[in-house]
Length: 366
Ligand code: FMN
Image 1: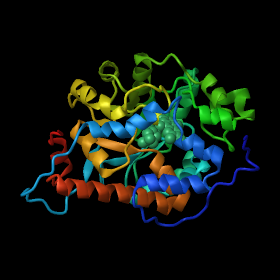
Image 2 (image 1 turned 90 degrees about the horizontal axis):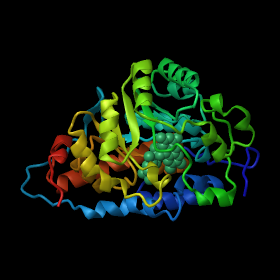
Image 3 (image 1 turned 180 degrees about the vertical axis):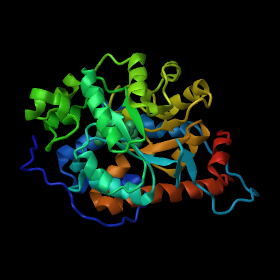
Image 4 (image 1 turned 135 degrees about the vertical axis):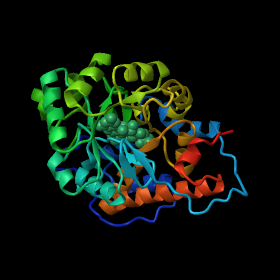
């Protein structure tokens, strides 16, 4: 089923959501997002082994209940790159929010900013940067860069992100080719709308907006020189996203990365890779607190956030669940998702006897 602009109708409601859990949210979202769009969002690569493993691998570690802990109203507030946040929960960069809701990235930006956390804007945004900025006030935003083969194009994109007020560049390094997304192939999925930033380097390929064509124009040979180049050119903190091996974390930091983003792209790239959580302990050891660690891929519960922080992350990023909230409730739905995760984390903190985020980080899982 090929879906073009004329036939793709994204959901449009704007309402707060009463969330029981985000699996239920996914199920509800599957009923209202057009099939091609839903499969693109929810799907993973190949057998979807890694997609599943991202969630199940959290069970390899357990949280010891602690009592007589003298804890009340746990405090989830934290600071990341100088930004004060209500919780260690930020928004992952995600392409084409217009698949989930007619308000596109503008709806997400409003919802994230009403909650008060960091928004990461994808190179594959379907909204202009100025449109999202308008609804965000002072809420910090990061720009996620997929590199073009042409550094002049990269410079122009970084210039735009900087002019728009981005406070960090997230260099995604794990998507140099597209993962084997079989659902998208079966659906003959193409993006049903334009993407203003990436069109800068799509050149002749824009006509059918097929995924493979986008990757053809992206840079494949990414190395530490690119990290150095972006850090020097942008004069902003560069966070390297897609790190799953301790060696790559060390290489990134040596090249000037100001942050490490542990992620396997939500199981959308290399199928057969471990669950992202399984890689965190060794990466955290290698990073050794030199720079902050952001963790994603598989966060679905407060328990998962707690475990990621206890294993060395400084904050977690939410991906798919935010788009499901956007689909079901627009900007308000997005805020509801962040509030759900914060409340769930607070409950876990209370039961695990931890008053603050720093207490979680000191907790040993069993
Ligand atoms: N990561 C990027 O760095 N840039 C992107 O443009 C991007 N687009 C994505 C689009 C979709 C629909 C999804 C689900 C993920 C995308 N990601 C992208 C990966 C996310 O940033 C994040 O790593 C992933 O969603 C985490 O997995 P989870 O959603 O299962 O928790």
